[in-house]
Length: 314
Image (cartoon, rainbow, N blue to C red; front, side, top):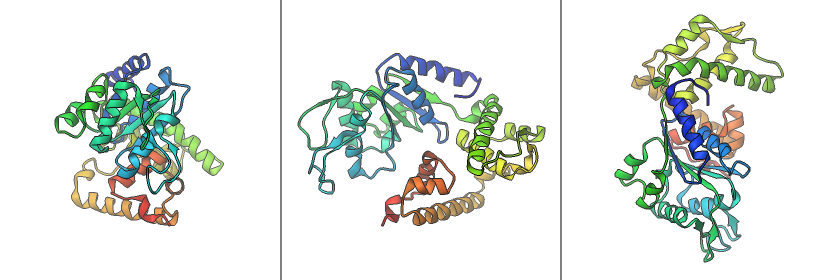
C-alpha cells in the first residue's frame, strides 16, 4: 500500500495483526479504495501465503451458482452441472478466499459460512461428508459490518465472526497527503504497462507543477481506482516529457454532481461496455483486455451499470 497518512499506516498495522492469526477479517471502504489489494496483503502476511488466493464478487455471481463457487458440489447435486466440482474453499486449501459485497450473498449461504467458520469444516452442495476448512476468509463491503448486521443484510451467524477484526480503508479525500505518492506510483506502473503494450515507453516521465496541483486539489470520488485510470489516460495523451493539466481528464471537481454530466457519462460507459461484451460473446477476460482495464475494474463497471455478461454468451 502506498501512502504516509496515519490512516494507511493504521491499515498496515492491522494487516500485520491479521497475518499473525487465523481468524476471518472484514474490510470496509468506498468503491475504488483497493479492498482486494488489502486482502492480498493480508494473504501475503499470513501462514497461508503459499496457498491460493480466490476473489469472488458476490454481487456478480448468479444466486444458483454462489454455493457451487464457494463450497463446490457433488455430481448431480445441481441439474445443470452433472460433474462434481470443487469450490473456492477446496481450491484454495491453505490459502485465502475474498468475498466482496458479502451482503449480496443469499442469507442461507451467509449462515452456512458462519457455521463453517464455527466448525472449521464445510460440506459440498449435495454432500454429506464434512471437509476441513483450511483457508482464511476475508469479506469486504462498502459499509461497516455493524451497519450491515443492524439492517439485516448480513446474517448473525456470519456477522459475529466478521466483527473480530474490521479494517477500514478511508477514501482518498480524507488523506490528501497520499495523493501525490499514489500518483507517482501509478505513473511508474502505467509507463511499464504502456511500454509492454506498445514496445516503447511514454515520453512523459513526470508531472508539471500545475498538474501536481490539479491532482492535489481534486476530490477523487472514485478513489485510487479513479486516480490510476486518470494517470493511464494522461500518459496516452501526453506529448512532452511531463503530464500537463490539459492531459488530465478531471473536469470541474463538482462534475460528478451535475446530473446531465453524470447521466451522459453513464450512458456512454454502458454502451461501450455492452458493445465490447457483445463482440467477445460475454468473455469477460477478453473484453477487459480490449477495454484496457484489469478484470476487477471491468467487473466494477458491469456492476455499476447492472450489466450481466451471461446476456451476451452464445
